[in-house]
Length: 493
Image 1 (cartoon, helix red, strand yellow):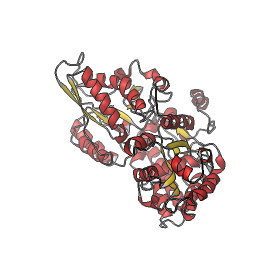
Image 2: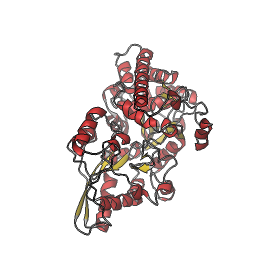
Image 3: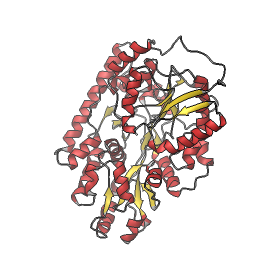
Image 4: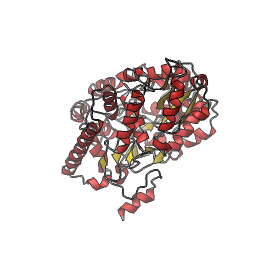
């Protein structure tokens, strides 16, 4: 899940370099090489930010401890909302745990330039080819060909789906066949559901979770203008951000129509996604939009199983997609200063063998290793269906990181320059009546992002690393079709 979080790159760079004394290439002459895991008692500290993973992690760690009793893995409870702050403090004090989850505000390139992370090439040796195509992508999991980030979930994680409450549908005289495929379907079905109870609504959304709202709006928008990828509102044809595309505008206006027609639960504006899912499980709404990870949360947190999963309804029922560009958003890093690298290596290899399968068994999320998703037995129909939809929704799409490695540096610069506004916040303001002209607001966001992008490109160019706006344009890309390596080679000709 996305977290806001750390201070600007300049401040963090200064703090990290002053404390660690490391050079820009992240090398250190103080590492102690160990031939193998120690037989003495060793404690590995592991920080993560995924509450849905807690049970699977605890079970996997117990199995590891039973197998290697001399290695203790500490897994402190850290509130996901506090993770970024705690990680910032650890960076500032040069006291990072042995293993830690990534944070969006500190890209892998930045961590490496601070000399804070260890490459893990030898950890993934023998495993690397088993992962999904596109996993080992420059600027996300690798730098200069070396691996610095290990996926925690399947990289095909952030597709959004529609959950439906079977009991609410039944009480309204409806069945699973009535689950809407288009916006018009949702309005028509919603009118019938509204008649079944005064406190039951067709749809509920946790709009306070703005990153989630940005995600499903972007995904629905691809059915209207597929050139704009849902991940970040970027038009891969023009090489510019385009939050003011017809896709975003019409998707936001559709949610507003649901609100005006009283088909959207009135609490949607003041609750987050977890509160929305609880009300959904309690029969207060027929549908909720969320990520595929909600399947396990409904079952574990709400003890609710009478639900199904379907693709998001889109305008006119047209195809939608979520772009997979190598941006494995949930990953683990290893601290450069760990004193127990061999034990960490052993644990992470066990992690790939056992945690990945454990999360499948518990219905938490898919594995980053393709074969495990095919062979692990899962007795959880909603989870299996969510994974199927997610897999079908993802389309391998181009990314400037792959075309020009200098784009990684541009991203690090851009990270501290992006506007603080988000599409999700604009939706919230529009529904609350604070935003009167949604197109104008989205245009302002678009301008802010494109200005920040150009400034970042200019700065990297001035440093002597060539990168051009044309590196962000992919004229030979066909939306909704996988973008192969051959397509990148075409652009070089």
